[in-house]
Length: 345
Ligand SMILES: Cc1ncc(C[n+]2csc(CCOP(=O)(O)OP(=O)(O)O)c2C)c(N)n1
Ligand SMILES: [Mg+2]
Image 1 (cartoon, helix red, strand yellow):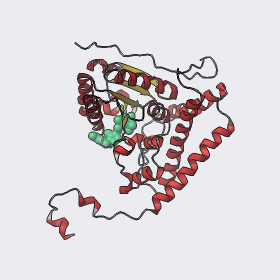
Image 2 (cartoon, protein in one colour):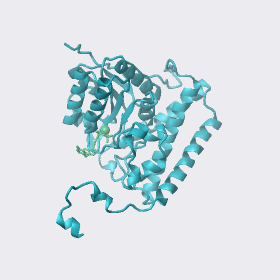
Image 3 (tube, helix red, strand yellow):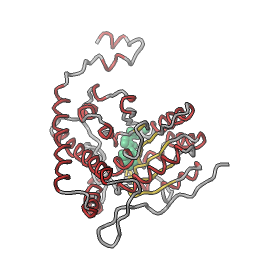
Image 4 (cartoon, protein in one colour):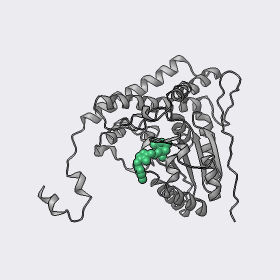
C-alpha cells in the first residue's frame, strides 16, 4: 500500500516583510542565482505589462494576463534541470522566455500566427494548452515514459485551481502516483476560475489535501514568494528523480488582474482585496528582499528592466514583420479528405 501522507497546511514562506517577519534563505542559491531569479521575474513582468499595452493597441489578440504570477512561474521553472520538460497552460504562455525562446514567438502565438507554435523538443516545452487540465495526463505520460526509458528527466505541469475539478486532472494525478511518474503537479491557486471563486470550486479546505487521496505529498507554498516556490519545486524534483513519484504543490496567490483581456472582473471581484494584494505583489517583495540582503542595486534593477523592454520592442517588431500566414494552413493538416464545401471555397 502506498503511504498516504498528510498535506502540509502551513504556507511555506522564505521572504520576510522587512519588519517583524525575518528573512530566510534557500540553501544552494548564491547571489548570482538570486539575481537570475530576479531577472526572470522582471522579464516575465515586462512581457505581461507590454502585452496588455499591445492588446489595447490591437497588436495582439485576447491575452491571458499573468501579472502577480511571476514568482510561481520563475521560482518553479528555474528549479528545473535543463533536461526537464514543462507543460504550460495559457497562464504560463511566456514561460519559454526563461529557456531562451524569443518574445517574437510567444507574441506570435497571441497574434494567432503559426510562428507561435514551436517544436516542443527545441525548448523541452510542450505547446500552450487552453483546454483546462487536458495537459496533466500529457505531462504524466511524458514523465512515466522517461522513467521507463531509464532517463532522469522530470516533468512540471502548471494548472489552475479550477483545473482541479476536471476529470483529466484526477486521471493524471492518480496515474502519476500509481506509476510513480517523476512529475511535479503545480497548481497556481489564484482563487478564481474566471468568475468562479475557490469557495464555489471545492468543499476541500485546502487544495493540497487532494494529494492525500492519490497517495502523494501535498505542499502549500506562498505563490508570492519566489524563493519558497523555488524550494518546494526543488524538493519535489529531488523526490521525483529519486524514484519516489509525484508531488502536488499548491502555490497560493490571488488573481488581481482580469482573467484575460476580454474579462471585466469589476462585476465579481472584491476591489479592496485586489488593492491590498497588488501592494504586496511578488516582484516588489523580492526586490525589497534582495536590497535588504545587499544583492540588488538600482543599477542592476534598471539594467534588468531595460534589457527586458528592449527584448519586447524587438519582439513585437519581429512578430509584426512576419508575412501573413497562408489561410490554407488552417486546413492543411486537419482533413485527410477535405469536405466538398471546403474544396469549393
Ligand atoms: C475544458 C475546458 N472547459 C472550460 C474552459 C473555459 N475556461 C477557460 S479558462 C477557465 C477557468 C480556469 O480557471 P483555473 O483553472 O483556476 O485557471 P486560471 O485561469 O485561474 O489560471 C475556464 C473554465 C476551457 N478552456 N476548457
Ligand atoms: Mg484560477
